Image (cartoon, rainbow, N blue to C red; front, side):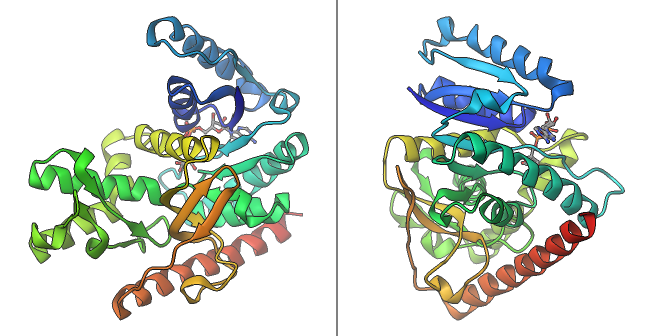
Length: 317
Ligand code: APR
């Protein structure tokens, strides 16, 4: 059995654990801070007790605050951090989560130097960059989860709009995980039929806008906290693609080391092929001038935040 460590036993982390276990993909180690070790243990035990009913076979599901338990993980998923609270600036969030994610990445990579890291903590693209910098792993082994989630949201909205099963809807959303993400209607279809043939331009624009605000819409409805079912499910799809060596083409936050899309030095959502090596390759699509400009704008904004994060981390030392 493969081993997946999930750091952060909160809403997203425990949902990742659930889907990974239910899909029989791996044994799972859920890690949280010492104060919340009991919570991690309790959730792991609760989940383990669902196994006889749900019929999956993971032999081991543990909750802990001790990274020694994560030794030799195949995959480490980082969900540790805080969600933005009312009154908190983006900068506050960046400072707090950068400190947490850096510490988590350092501890986790010591135990699992051969793992593939999937980063979930927001601001996503910046945190993924930080994990790669901190772990010094090859960038093919550090991947951010956002594109799968943003595309799934777009797919769900397209399915709802047309009253067709979301199963038949494919969609592609690139760019950063935030206001500047780049939904690509031209590359979105219902079983091969481009959505541009099925939905008016105005309605596609409305669905794209709802996708862009997809996270915020849920935050507003929940009152406290943010989304976790779709994020957890998205992570489990990436874990599956990697552990089962599936060569799946999924939009993920990756580092374009060969200057793909005219980009470099920035983690950003691009179409990526995932397999047992982690990122196998980035697939280059022909984008229109508008789409390229949107992607560049998104990359510039992430770069600014990377710069800000480096300043905040340097000031904290
Ligand atoms: N080490 C381990 N766990 C930590 C640490 C740390 N240093 N710091 C915080 N955590 C844990 C918290 O104790 C908490 O249990 O991370 C968990 C985060 O869980 P939630 O607060 O429930 O947040 P969640 O909804 O899971 O979101 C986590 O994913 O989607 C993103 O924006 C979201 O950045 C956020 C992250």
